Image (tube, rainbow, N blue to C red):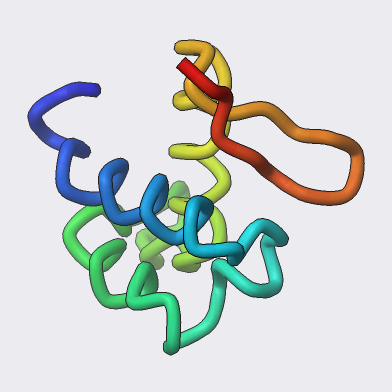
Length: 81
């Protein structure tokens, strides 16, 4: 995990381990990820910040690429190490 996203990635993995495994569950105020995504919501092409769900999706894909999580077709899960 890069230093820039370390805290966000850790929080995301914690949420997955706690049973919040769908995008709908992750993109709620209760998960706390919306607040943590704020520093990473850089402006897009139209100078508007990207939505929190996009940041969550980007980080899930990055963690998937590193082999830490996988998508089962319905939900995300942490890969056992």
